[in-house]
Length: 90
Image (cartoon, rainbow, N blue to C red; front, side, top):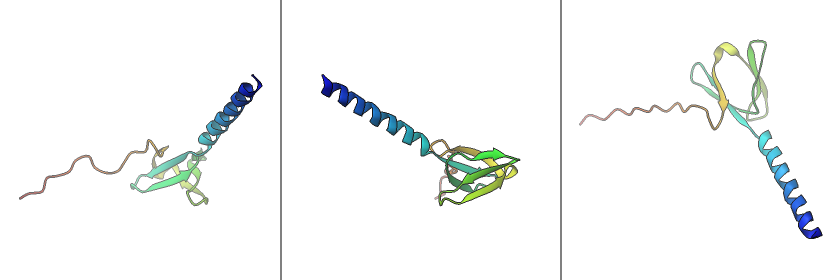
């Protein structure tokens, strides 16, 4: 009986650590109004009319809010590839 309780505690501790680590590793994509995309590690913070963020290289940076079109998690960022492909003429 003690072995089952020890295993349950171990599994619970492992699951808790896994959930905490997954919440900390979010990447976001800032899409600027000119179409340029910036990948950030962590969610950008909006303050004083602009976004403060840490880029993928670990450098802290700032971008004015007027230059930003979208801030979204990397998994939900819009792809810039067009949905329409013109047919080539023969």
